[in-house]
Picture: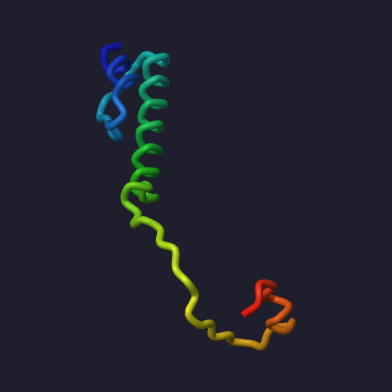
Length: 81
């Protein structure tokens, strides 16, 4: 029971070497371990917004096309050159 109550509040334990005979507490502990493992996987997988460099706005200097465009450039750029 004490381990089950601890796991309800703990969000960092991802592995537990403990055998529980009571089905209720075993279920609660298992759900907490799955929750903690999912949380750890998400933290390792994607960087947070704090870790990413700030976005910069830049002007396009030139553009090299691999194939000719289907439409004339004047139709693609409505603002004019």
